[in-house]
Amino acid sequence: QVQLVESGGGLVKPGGSLRLSCAASGFTLSDSYMSWIRQAPGKGLEWVSYISSSGTTIYHGDSVKGRFTISRDNAKNSLYLQMNSLRAEDTALYYCARARDPYGSGSYHFDYWGQGTLVTVSS
Amino acid sequence: SYVLTQPPSVSVAPGQTARITCGVNNIGSKSVHWYQQKPGQAPVVVVYDDSDRPSGIPERFSGFNSGNTATLTISRAEAGDEADYYCQVWKTNSDHPGVFGGGTKLTVL
Image 1 (cartoon, each protein chain N blue to C red):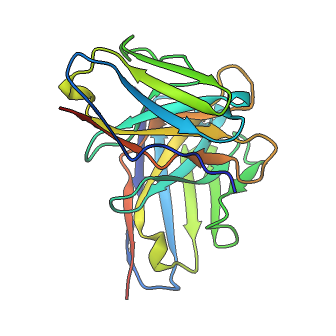
Image 2 (image 1 turned 90 degrees about the vertical axis):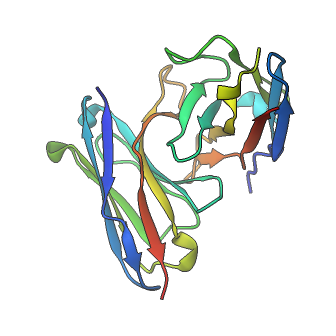
């Protein structure tokens, strides 16, 4: 069965860095488009980053552009999010999710999600 | 900026029909996806591409998208439907394509 397991979250000081990982199983990661989505405590969902199956197409949200970098290692069935210059407003539960476009229309939705890893940015 | 507007809360009596809206100018030209999130759990897609349902999602969940408003309809509401619901679109030809609505808390009274 499909499983996504995030890790790497924790407490970090403002200006610090963290690298999140997402281990995928139960499906072929190399055929899949992936995203990171976050949720601040008590708040709504915010899309963060997207990476195509080959890693050649990458997008980041405006709030993290220039600070966060999404990457993948298909041989290790893993997705990553390198987070630099962290701010208090980056405090959130970070989910990795598989992005799917069943009709090839260019519109992706997220059909599988992990349980998330918590990132807390505080001094 | 591109902001999907949802009502913060919707209430429905058990057995009745709940409608949750998601609005932005000309949303009908895009595909809209809907997620259900219960406390302490990851979101689950309940409708994708405006009106398709993943396997395992009851037929009570349906979607429609036209003009400036997309709507998630939950028929014969049950206590177990109480959750936060989010709409989402993917803006093609954008370098920050993923957008979620602010979410709607559905209360089944």
